[in-house]
Each structure stands twice: as C-alpha cells, then as structure tokens.
Amino acid sequence: MMRLANRGLCTGIIVLLLLATVALVVMPGCGEPEKAAVPVRFGILRNDLHQLAYYVAREKGYFTEEGLDVREGGAFNAGPEEMSAFAAGELDMGLVGTSPVVTFASQKMADVKIVAQANTEGSAVLIRAGLEGEDMASFRGRTIAVPGFSTVQDFLLRLALKKAELSDTDVNIIVLKPPETLAAFSSSQIDGAVCWEPYPSMAVNDNKARVMLTSHQIWPDHPCCMLIVASEFLSKNPEVVRKVVAAHVKATDFINKNKLEATDMARMFTGQDKNVCASAMKNVKFDPDPDPVEIQKYVDYLKTAGVVKVTDTGDFVDDLVDSEYLPRK
Amino acid sequence: MWVSSTKWKVISPIAAILLWQLLASAGLLGKTPSPWQAVEGIWFLIDTGLPPGYRLWGHAGASLARVLAGFAAACLVAVPIGVLMGWSKHLDAVLDPLVEAVRPVPPLAWLPFAVLWFGIGLVSSSFIIFLGVFFPVLLNTVSGVKSVDPRLPEAARTLGASEATILGRVLVPGASPSIITGIRIGMGIGWMTLVAAEMTGVKSGYGLGYMILTARDYARYDLVASGIIVIGLLGFAMDTCIRLVEKRLLRWR
Image (cartoon, rainbow over all chains, first blue to last red; front, side, top):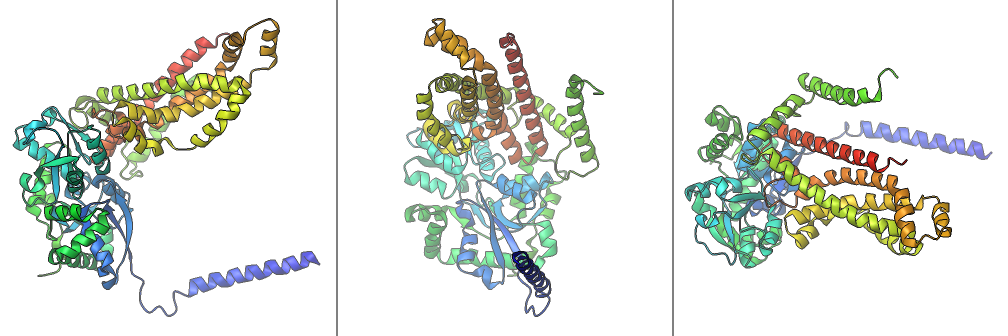
C-alpha cells in the first residue's frame, strides 16, 4: 500500500512539473504588454569622482526615466582591469579612462566605441608631505606611483616629466592601486604619485602629501574618463545606447548646474567627507563632449612609446569616437 | 608500454604545444595568443623589456629572490615546528587547532596586512609566499614524523639513546621522504602565490607576476603568455633541483 501511495505522489509531482514547464514556455508569449528592457551591464572605476554622473543618473532615476535597465557590471581598481572585462565580453557599457580604451582598442583586444565623455582634468601629481621640492625635477631618482601602466595618470606623469626635461629612467615609476597609494605615502614607501580625484584631495586632507601639479597645469582640458560601449552591443541596441547617453548627459548637466547638491552626492558616491569632496570637485571638469583631436594625443604617444601598433592614428580615432549618440544641441 | 616514461616527458609537452599552435592557427582561440607569439614575446622581454627597459632577467631574478626568501623562511620555520609537533602529542594538541584555523585562509587575504606590516618591498611579497609554503611543509613534516614505526624510537631508547638523538637520528631521517614531498608541494604553491604577492606592489619595478600585470595593462596578452611560460619553466627547474637533492639525501632508501 505504501509503495502505491508513493507512486501516486510521484506521478502527481511529475504532472505538476510538466504543467509548470508548459506554463513557463507559453506565458511570455501571451499578453506581453511591452518588451522587457535590455539589461545594460555597466562598468565603473572604484571610488573615482570623475564617474559621478553614473551615480547621479542612477540615484536621480535618469536611467529609469529612459526606461533603461542599467545594472552595475563591476567596479574596477584601474582602467586596464575594466577593459579586460570588456575584452571578455562581460560588460556592455562603462566609464573608463581614455588611455586604457585606446590601448585595448588598438591592440584589438576590446572592440568598443567612445560615445560620450565623462570629464576632462581631475588628476594631480602628489609629493609626499615633508619632502622638499617645488617642481618635477625634485623627483629625480625618486619613486612615483601610478594606478597602472597606460592609464591616464601614467600618461600625465610622462608628459610632466618630459616638460621638466626628465626621462622615464630618471625616476622609478611603479604601479600601485590608488587605495594602497595613500598607505604607501604614510609609510614613506613612495615619494610621489599620480591619482584621480578624490585621492589627491584625500591625501592633502590627511596631510599625507601635497599637490605638486594639477593635471590642468600639465595639459589643460585633457580628456579623461569616457563613456564607452561594446561595438556588438551598440549594433544590436543603438536606441538603448542613445538613451544611456541621454541620461549621462542629463546627469552631467545636473552636476554642473547644482554644484552643492552634486558635492553632497559625491560624498555618498566616494564615502569621503565634505571638505575632501568640495576640494576634489573643483579639480574635475564634467563635460560630455569628447574631443577627438585631444584624444588623438594619447594614441600618438602610445604609438611612439611602441606600445600600440596603429598605422594612422587620425583614422583610428575617427573610428573609435562616435558622437552620433549625443543629444543634438 | 610502447614508449618509455622518459620519452613521455619530452613527448607530452611538445604535443601540448603543437595542439595549442594548431588550435590558434585554426583561429579557434580568439584573442588568445599562439605559442609562437608567446615565444616571440619572450624575445621581446629579453631584448626590449616590459615596461621598456625592464628586461626579463631582472624580472626573473627579482621573482626568484622573493620565492626563495619566502620558501627558505617557511622551510626553516615549518620543519622544526613540524618535527616537534609530530614528536610531542602535547605540543600537537596545543598547536593543531591554530594551524587548522589559519591554514584555510588564502595567502592573498593577508595582503592588506602584509602591506601594513612590511610595506611594498621584498619582505611583504616574501611573507605572502611564506604563508603559501609554510602549511604543506608543516603538515607533511608532522605526518612524516608520526608515520615513523614506533618500534624504532623505542628500540633506540632501550639502547640508551637520548631524546635529542632519537629526534635527530631516528625521527627526522624517517620522516624525510614526507618532508621533501611537503617541500616540493610548498615550492609549487610558492610560485602560485607569486603573482598575488607581487600585486602588493614592487618597489623595484621588477618581478614576473608584476610583469604579467604590466602586460595586461598594455593589453599585450602575448606577453602575458610569455610570462606564464617563464614562470612554468622556472618552477619546473626548481622542482628538478629539489628532486636531485632528494635522490642524494635519500640514497639510503
């Protein structure tokens, strides 16, 4: 008798499972009022104030207003890490520095397009508190940290060294992720560093370092973080990309028009206090329009450094930057 | 067997490389570099260096120094403690829970403390390697000592040997095959933790793990493959050295 009862139970379960399967297969077909939004896997850099527009768009609901389903696809410690995720096809869109974008695109490791800009400027060369020296020449023979080779900060450092008539070998350039950079200043492991905001403001606020040069002084209006999209995602979902760009531009406008509230949001985004955020915000220019002429300078440099193989840097940038999706003015 | 095991030692790596090249040539590997590109990359690392000017010998030397320092320190600490733990039930009872609690922690988890305690130089990366090497050496030593036939120390005792003599002349030699196995496993893990260890940052700008991360920053995945091959070859060479030492030491077997 027990065995029979068990068999009945089993049959019941199987029938239920079959019904559930049928329901799952049939349901989406009948009565679907609107197509579910295409999820956008979005990558950002950890604790990078340049990317505040992403946070503003998310918190202010600009993505939702556009009917978008933007999901955080990863927060990375440096641009090359985020570009590796693009190379692996793990991200659809993201904010990342120009230099890693150019490096990965020119090596054909990641097929991406720049569709908008996040900011220009917003980095600084720091010198450890207590060290003498007013100009780059005082770094001769000393150790300077960058967040990664071939990052915007690495590029800025090499530019500043060149201006001071120092060669790359006159200083010891090492890679340290920005969070470790502050600790390395405290323990006197490094003498200088190039970081994105809010790290320079954090270091100054904690008396760990002082600013030797802002990136504005090194290269005014230099392109920094870009909004990029995987080419495959762009060709499949051009309208989604247009909407993300629209939300990004709206958020950027908000930041520029409401500095006080934006600073407050920067506090939430970076977890830093008001002083740090206020000082950091002054050094970043939020501007959604990418300038291909300035971007080409990165490509030219990487080409002369022998890092990337590009025949015509102008053509390469024309192909990489696609301003088509920016809202018409 | 249709070929001897020595021949297999040559055939299997060559076959693996051929298969890799074949898949790459057929375009089945996508962005993954071919073995030929990796070999070209090794030449680039010797000739130009990465970042340019930082050549392969410097990277290999720095990594060898770190691995050897971490490895030697781990062996020097783990073997005596392991012998004592195997010899004394009391000490084993005291230390075993500690060992078992710390052992499962991945060496990389200690990274923030390593930087805090030792900065970003040789010591912090060697410390991470030390953690990787320490436990396999310790556990193999303990089990090696415990597996010595209990009649042997008893016999020595009846013949009037002191505890120190029993430890040095009976237990340690008896445990040595197991200790050496632990050392070989430890050496492998030492190399495995190297990339993680060099992520603590290297002040000199040299190190194979660091070089691999640099290659990634430059999107030079061919050079990533070259770095992996160099680490593999160095690890293989060092394992061979340990085996040669093992053969000499354990000739009595």
